[in-house]
Image (cartoon, rainbow, N blue to C red):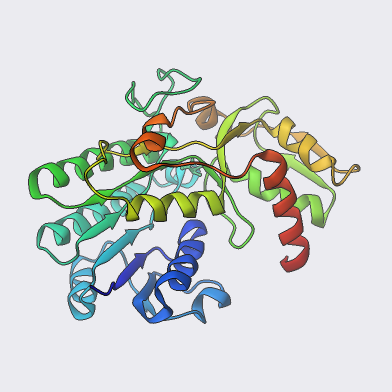
Length: 315
Ligand code: AKB
């Protein structure tokens, strides 16, 4: 059966690269990008685009019905730091979009859904090192609370209504095509732009703040791999832990100075430090490796080289 895929929130950091990857796999016309506003020219020129608010149930229903959609990727969300500023709006966007799409799955309007969760489901009482798949999830941010509730709803719709929803707890994602917006791990992208542009960077986290991170190509590969996996071995229907590497701002700085020896970083922690302090340092993703064969490809050295090379060429 041919696929018709919809990506909601296609113009964000993950949505942009996911849309391009899906289009190169399945053909431009089979992948409908949608967002509340337009994205990069590369994305906009690569195939069909629909302007749509992911919290509008009727608009979603019409889009799915008219196009006989088979798969949905719901990437629209407000990230951790912005969500602390606008808690009610974050809850409304992060929860209503998910509940609407799950309800449309229950109505049989598509057959498979991807929805991203985050390391933000963990909180200050979670074991920090090698955080297990099943452990304490007592998030201290609105974003984390919405992701934890979302995981519960995903598992519920799968169990009760057989909606085939699949999910990953993304760590901080590092990409050069699109900048993230409003997250706590954003420093790890900004730092590359500033290293090349000005040769210095003021980091909003302490230099010793270790966080789980991943290069975007690995995250896209994992997402496609999970969506391709046969349903049988998928033992987690909340959301899979996923890991590649962990580093501190000081370690990332060292990795960049191997290429740019004069690069200087100062550390002036702001309110995002508290969010980062509540998250794990590293993640145990053995369940994802076992259930669907996940393996990462990028370590810190390779990621740093790729980021600098691509930003120099395209930035
Ligand atoms: C954020 O920092 O809010 C996100 C995330 C870890 O989910 N990048």
